[in-house]
Length: 155
Length: 215
Image (cartoon, rainbow over all chains, first blue to last red; front, side):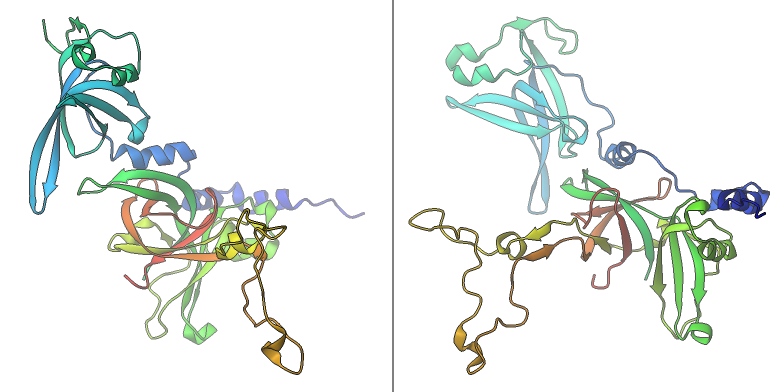
């Protein structure tokens, strides 16, 4: 009678359980991780180390560096944070201000190296995560009620 | 000239030194085992055979297992040859491991992959033809190729379309080379290459990365 011989047992017996076998597996081993882990590892290098704490409705000073030819200078944009969206490297925040009776909004990528500094200077009272309703308002109505908060240090 | 086999992980974004946000593809490349070294004396040309991604020995034939055993490694799923110049002795030995560090000095790479299959595609999708108007009397030929030849094109024998005429047919699922893509970063710890732009094939698909032939 022929002895049933499985390829698997033959192989494992021969060179996968032995010392040499283990060595072999080590050598060809690929440092695995899930897709998300690997993508996060790449993204994390572009992420900002520390993000200053600011909230929706805060009035912030955003200092961003602007390249003009060879010169790099810093510009300050002051306004109300009306939205913060996205996650990871895609996270952005929207700052709205009124210039000459005209609403101006700038969307800043939170992790961009060009955004040098974000400094909250005044907290506003809000009941929404997105303050898009401010776009319909003009004049005094765009001002949010002042709120005392530790992170802005305003009284 | 360096070459590695790898797997496309997916796309994301990364900032470069000047603060620009780049679209990047992450490729897990290597470590690749040198399965065989070919030389001019034995094979007529110089090359090394690279293997990537372990596979259970029970899933491979004995010949492939034996081939891998010579290199003191397990059988590999993805095996490709890397041609080396004929006049220089190959510097690699059988059983060597090649990692992403071979690209340390490269600024750009070519990535070869198998594009996503699109099945039988019409001329608009396959060759970018503009089709016909949606209205103004157009009937039943909105995405048609139009005329493909005239009767007179081969006078005396009846018309026949020219060779190479762009027509509908199978699209995708073929070897595509993405040339001269900037190498943004190398992660030696996780064996990752970060390449600017897109790369053929689905996430998880095998690809071949080599130093760019044209910088």
